[in-house]
Image (cartoon, rainbow, N blue to C red; front, side):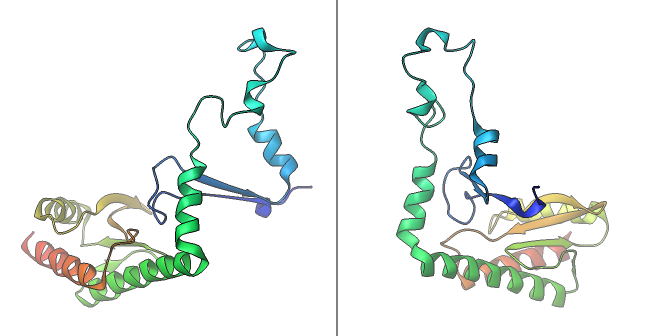
Length: 180
């Protein structure tokens, strides 16, 4: 019997700064991964049946090997480098949440990783602030809906982000929010 915790999937592109389509699946029982990922090329590659199944010799037939970027990033960072990167971006998200909350704005989510959802009042005001921050240009944050409310979504993920970048971004958000 399978449990819900038998597998886990995530997208590597944000924290590892690799291309968008570099996903990761960890599966406790390889049998289930094989069942989900298997390819039966009948009707598509019949001409080579009996010789060799091409999908057994290439990654996803003719698509590029997406795992190489993930491997390279993990290899370059190492365990401590990855832990530092994740920890640092989570700390910066906390910094955003604490300072924006202290400035009077509502943090909608429990900031446990690198994501912060902020409301600047009603949905229209929040949309104006999002547009203003994007126009201002210090940082980029998009909009989202959370439990029926409009929110600014701040995602701290770049390896190059510094505490100074976060401070400048917070000041820009506060300035734009007070002007809108």
